[in-house]
Structures are given as C-alpha cells and as structure tokens.
Figure 1 (tube, rainbow, N blue to C red):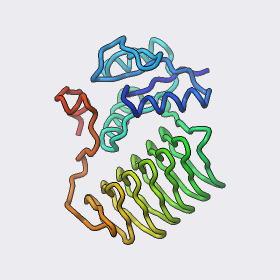
Figure 2: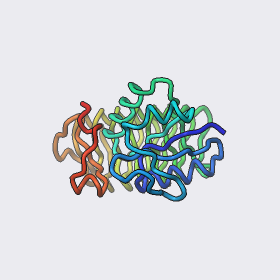
Figure 3: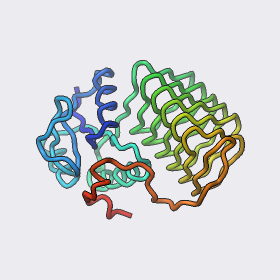
Figure 4: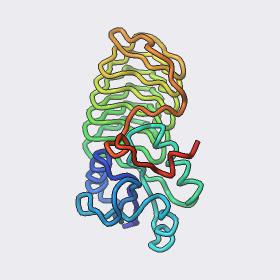
Length: 237
C-alpha cells in the first residue's frame, strides 16, 4: 500500500486514523504535528516532526499522500496551501468511513473526511478538504464548498449551498433551499430557516446574526494552542 502522512495529532486525528485503518487502502507512515514532541506516539503511530520536516520526509520515504487532520476550517486551509507550496506533487487523500452512506452521483473533492454514520444524499458535491462529521446528513443536490465543514448531528434539507470555509456546528438543523455565505459560522443547535451572508456568526432558534467575523478568524483551538504554543504556519496569511 502507498505510504501516507497524517498532519495533526489531536482527537480529530484519532478519528481519521481509525477511518484510514478501516479503509485499508493506505499505509500510515506517521504523523506531523507542531505542538507535540517528535517520536511521541498517537495510537501506534510516531510523530515524525513538524511542518518544517515534511519535505525531507516525503523525499526520503517516498510518501504518496497526506491528509490534514485539523478540525478548524481556517487552519486546515492555511496548512493545505502551505503543503501545496512545499510539496506540490503530494496527493491529498480522502478518509471515508465504511459506515458512511454516499448516494448516487455524489462527488467528493480531495482531502475530504466523511465520518461514521454520515449520510450524503444523491447529486451532492463536497469540495476539497471538507469535513462531514459523525451522524451528519447532507440533503440531495447540496454543495459544500472547499474547506467547509458540518459538525456531528447536523441535519440539512436538500439544495443547501454552504460557502467556502464556512461551518455548521453541532446539532444544527437547516431547512431546504438555504444558502450560507463564505467564512460564516452557524452555531451549535441553531435552526436555520433563511439565507445568511459572508463573514458572520449566527445562532439561535430561529438563527439570527450575532456578529461579524473576519475571513481568517478561527473558531476551533487545540489545548496546546490555548496554552500559547506557536506554529510557523500561524504566520501564513
């Protein structure tokens, strides 16, 4: 099997490792993480170094592909673009749990994760580096643009348009024929009954705009980041 690297060593990475093992299509060579010590283990897989070590590892060990195991959309976008700059020939692989259900004519982009119990209904298109999380459902004819995500338990009607780098948080419900703009966050438990524009945070039942947000504003942080550790990738704009 072809060798791949998982970028990230958090709880999200644990789920992705489990999916890749169940897929049994790739050999997980190891992990890259900027916050944890080299040679530490996650499950049985060694942390090989930070992002600064990636190019050398790819060349030395003939690495075929990579998946970015980062839950925050903005951070995943920054890391993906950096990897593309440093290792342009590296393939971004998908992690699709065998218990997920993909309907007829579903199209998946590269680097996308579909978790256990997720349902993606017919004629839906999921972009690059997206996340369809545990027990979430995507209605028919929906489009999730690149670097977007839907969290566990999200229920969506058909014909949703979810914008670039936008997120729908845990347990939200979205009725049919809704458009959500780019870089927008729908909060946990929200009930979405109308369209929302770019760069806002909305939640409630029914959901309403709470505040504006910037394009590169993150909404998920690891425990290590909360303690103030620093990554080179944070400097990338």
